Each structure stands twice: as structure tokens, then as C-alpha cells.
Image 1 (cartoon, rainbow, N blue to C red):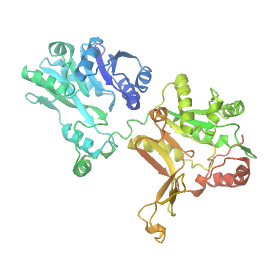
Image 2: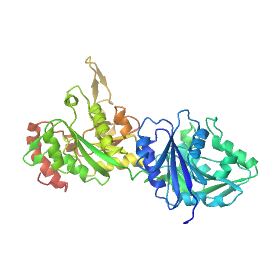
Image 3: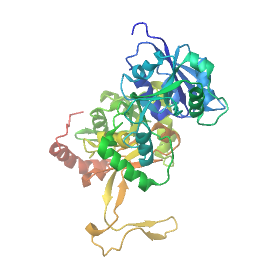
Image 4: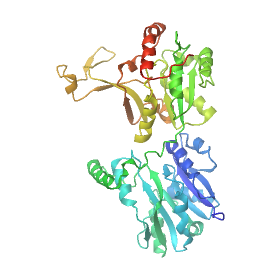
Length: 462
């Protein structure tokens, strides 16, 4: 393939920060030797463009978005004889995707090729169903069927020059194009070996129960439940440990060392960053192998300032220094009884199930009431006479400082736990102990040392 024609890949994006790194990583791992990438971005307000610029892409910006117009503009900025359309939230499943997608374009009677779209493990049931029904395993040559899909497609430049996409359509520009080329006597190929993971389906269906039943049967036959489970598992993950003032220190060293060592032990975490207002704590963090490249302003340590504001400021500084991470892990130094597997469990749950955020939590089966600012008490539990083991509902107490995994956009919006939330339950009652002062440190340190020894945790001297 030394003389392989240049392939121009047109990727349309609008706030695809969550997906664009996985998409581009897979694109630039292809075994096809001659390609360029044109990113057509519709005024993303997240960090889509910043993350994309970490790769050799050419940027085209569009304000008045129409799908066909975006493709046409991307093609005009490209140089390849072969043109590929790929959605910014689609991830090629392997390194042969591009080779397989363009192979049939040597035939002058083939107007275009579209590839398979596979659901992710956490795609909704109706999206799974639609993708599995439409995108099967048999290759097809379409003489009359005009179905075509630009989430994953290819065609020659000469064909596009004869049949450009409609600039004015708000959707289904690919279906109209497919009908046009079929009516002109050309053919369309469906190539299942050119496959991408696609979070969204191609239809919407409110009958979730019916979709669940269809998906269940199809997954039993094809084993599709695990498709895409690892599509995002090469995510870049930063850990942020916020510390106000000096780290509490006991006879066995500073409290901060436990959070840093646990973050360092997580294979998924790429950077461990301590955000503090104290020069002494910053130097301590560096001596423990973490990064502390800045001191946050004193006003962020006021009692009226919440953790959301601290994380917003910290993330902005981090992104200016290191780029935009895919995930952020927030760890509090005040929770030293953190299970060794908790961080990886939370990251895996976030990626496997597509959660917007995941928090550590503990089940609470005791009776619970809520009291508002006016002193009014609201009962939120089943009758206290019901045995705990027979209650239908148990409360889950969030332990944010023990561990939280979230997407950067959530932090920028001021709520790290917004969106679809997952919870990793921690069964050890000691894990909810928070050490916030020297007295609590003195009381808990002997117990902490014994706990870490019993759990096989490393407990190095500071």
C-alpha cells in the first residue's frame, strides 16, 4: 500500500469532548498509510477543539450548522482523492477500519461505502436494538436500496463533485445523497468489516420495555452485551487532591501521603495534582511524588466557598498546563481509610457504563429524616418497625472526599455530580471516617496503621 491514495477523513463535532480523544486515537492507529483529518467544528463550548489539537488535524469552524454543509466545507478544505465521513462520537473498533472501508472504491460503479455501527455496552436498549438490526454481519451491494449513513462512510472525490451533499437540509443528508446516486445507476456497498462504536442509535423509540426484550434476545444470540466495553479505556485521567492549609500530620507522617500513594497506585491515573493554598503543603506533595504546580488564591479557602469553585479554578489551571483530561478523579486527604481498589473500581464503572459521574457511597439502612432550615422534619424512610433486612429501600450516603470520578465538563458547569450518576458502594464502615483535625488524627492513626496492615496496603514512611 505504498502508493495508497490520500484519504481525507472529515469529522464533524459539536461538544464531543467526551469522545474526540478516543475517536482520534483510533483514527491515527489505522494501518492505512496515507491519511489526513479535517475537523469541522460547530462552535463547541467544551474542550473538543483543544483535545483535537493534540493530534495533527486541520480545523474548519462552522457557525450555521447543517450536516451536508459541514461535510462539503470539510471536503473543500481537504486534499484526498478518497473522502471519509466519521462522526466525532464514533470510535473505529480496530486498526483495519479505514482499509476495509475504502477497499471497494476501486470499482467505478460503487458510489459510496458505509460501515458497521456497533453499540457501546452502555448505549440505551433502543439504540442497541436499532444499531444491531440495521448494521448486520453480511456485506451488501445495494442496487435499489438507497440507505447510506455518514457517521461512517466513504466515497471518491469525483463522485462528490458530481453529487455534493445538500447544504440546506437539517438532517438525513446522507439518505438523500444515497437516493440520488442510486437513481443515477450507481451502487452503494455496506461493509461490516469497517466497524465503529457509536453511542447513539439511528432512531428513537419510547417503548423501552419492548426495546429491552429485543436487545436481550439479540444479545443472547450475538453476545453483543460487551461490545464497546473498552472503547474508552485508554482515557487520560488526572487525579486532583484539594488541600486547604497544612496537611494534618501524625506520628506516621502526613495525612496527605495516603491519598497520593493511593492515586499513584491506580494504573489508570496519568497525573496526581495537589491543589493547595499552602507553600508547605505544595512542597510536601512534591516530595511525595505528586505535582503541585500552582498555589490557589486565598479566597478559595474561605468557609463560604464550596468544593465546586475550588475544582473549577483548579481544572482551568491544570488544562492550561497539561491539556484537557478525559476524566478527573477527586480525592480528599481527610479520608485515609480508602479501599485500595476503590479508585480503579470507580474509573472502570464510569467507562464501562457511560456514567457522567461516579461517587463512593455507603448503604444506610437505619431510619432517616431530613430537617430543613426552618427546623421542619420530613420522614424519608419506611416505618421504623420494619426490620432493616426487610426494607425495600436503603439510603446511599455519598462520600465525595473518599472518591469521585467525573467528566471535566461537569466541573466547569459547577456540579461535579451532574448528569447520570453511578455509585460504588463501600462496605467497610471505617471508610466513612473523616480525619479533619489533629485530635481525630491522634485517635485514628493506630487504627489506620492496623487497618492498612490487615488489608495488605503499603504503608511507607514519609
